[in-house]
Amino acid sequence: MADCIFCKIVKGDIPCTKVYEDEKVLAFADINPIADGHTLIIPKNHTENIWEISGEDLSAIHLVSIKVAKAMKAALNSVGIALLQLNGSAVNQVVMHYHLHLIPRRADDPKLALTSWELKPGDMKAIEEIASKIASEIK
Ligand code: 5GP
Ligand code: ZN
Image 1 (cartoon, helix red, strand yellow):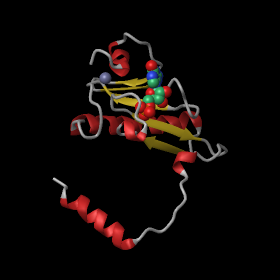
Image 2 (cartoon, rainbow, N blue to C red):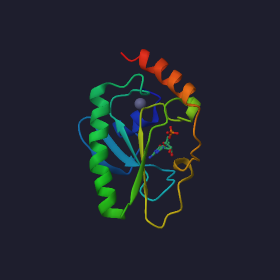
Image 3 (cartoon, protein in one colour):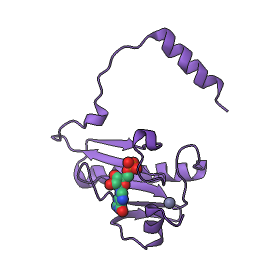
């Protein structure tokens, strides 16, 4: 897509710090890292979000995430990695080309705020009703 930053990166029109590439997928360093090693994995095909992406592209991204996650463990002594996809502008997706964030943590890193929400027991009746609404729409 002509005005998409990540499509321009795929084409080589905008530079990136490449971590991995194959025929379907590109992984590169985020230019605003929230941790050392913060990496993005994208499909080379322009596709915006989880409602649009093909199973083939999504599988390819996640297979590459295994490689990158293992490399992070070896290279950075990562003891945990947040794998995160912000799906839609309502949850702060800024670049509208599907991407998976890999955010590695070392043993002595402070907790990542976005992964440490408080656990509060929910209302089981509401939980069941909502889950069953979702389940009834699974195709
Ligand atoms: P989102 O909020 O859409 O999940 O995150 C988009 C991410 O893309 C941000 O973390 C941002 O730093 C990163 N980003 C935006 N533009 C560029 C760019 O031109 N190059 C690289 N490497 N990362 C980018
Ligand atoms: Zn794109």
